[in-house]
Length: 133
Image (cartoon, rainbow, N blue to C red; front, side, top):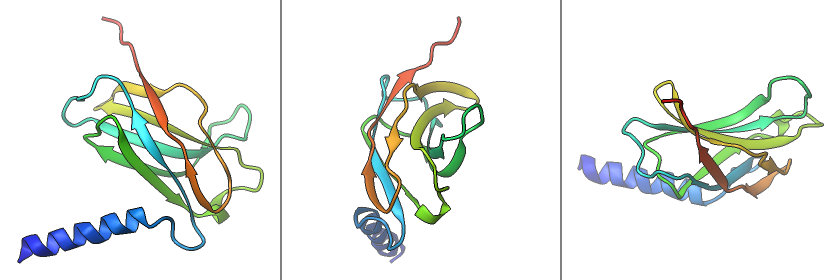
């Protein structure tokens, strides 16, 4: 009985992800690629939608998602409210993979996102971070 309920809940969750953003919201979606799959157990992928319009100031996080145990080719989706985005925003998506406090992979280029409602597709390619031995 519990297994059927869990499976039904998972199907509803997946159906909600596939249907697009809720009315009045927007979505950024795509796939994440990185070398070195598989990752160590406990690795965490963090993908953030940020406003990078302010020069010489930290980016403002609009929305983000964290995924434990990511794999290359993983699909992601970040829903956000366009009303939470400042008028002259310059949105971008960045990602990083960590194992504890150790940075493993990171995006190394600007990944722009259009401002407004609907769905924007941004595929992310992460680079391996080299650590001194």
